[in-house]
Amino acid sequence: MILTQRHQFDKHISIDNAGQYIAHYKQMTLRSVFQPIFSREKRIVGVEALVRIYTNGQRQIRPDLFFHSDQFNQIDQINVELLSRAIHVRNFSNSPFKNIRLFLNLLPSVGQFLVQNESFSTRLSTRINELNIRRPQIVMEIVEQHSEDNELLKEATQTLSNYGFHIAVDDYGSHASTSERVDLITPDIIKFDRTLLNKYMSGDTTPLLDAITVAQNAKAKTVVEGIETEQQFEAMKELNLNMYQGYFLGTPERVIPRVQLACG
Image (cartoon, rainbow, N blue to C red):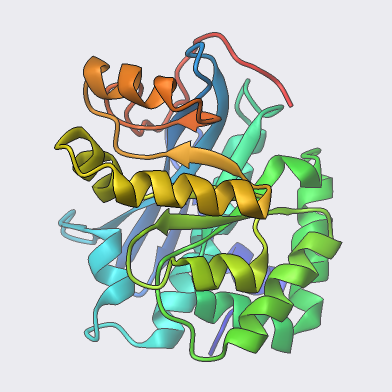
């Protein structure tokens, strides 16, 4: 059964000893971490919420493996994603940095579920308002998984846009995050996969430059992911991209780093 009602979510969510919201689901514990996203001036302009999944034995399950593995059925994947988003927005709203952008991952399958359950969008919007977060702060990142129904995915992103959320294509250049998906959902932001950065730094500049052209044609802002050295950061700044993310700049943490912020 897919979680749809507020009381169903509340049954799975609690607060740990550190005051962080966590979720429990089928022998798993879900926790939030936040990775900062920077401007070229190294100001935080947003944070990406990421889930950390632990078994009861405290063994960590990599989220990319969980959401791409046949070992876990689609209903469980959807519920873990829904619960992750629920704790992410609560933890974000309690942080001292709640006035910047919050990037939230969205599986295509969840987007399609959203269209088929319109009340879900209404409840999400209502919950965001209750937490005193402005809907334009929220960026829904459509992850690189393939969609079973592109028309439903397009309708889902349009519904989210109508509610005031921003839309991003995550990991552009990987799997289903292609120019065709950009054309389909007309995102506000395109996040370039780290493989494009690595190719660029090794001399194969065409994939990243082509991706920048796609973003320009779509009138979408840009984020480059996977920056791990100062040399990479300086090279990406020369391309005049909008936002920058990677371990060189900031690692995912349960508490968002206290550095200079750019609001909006």
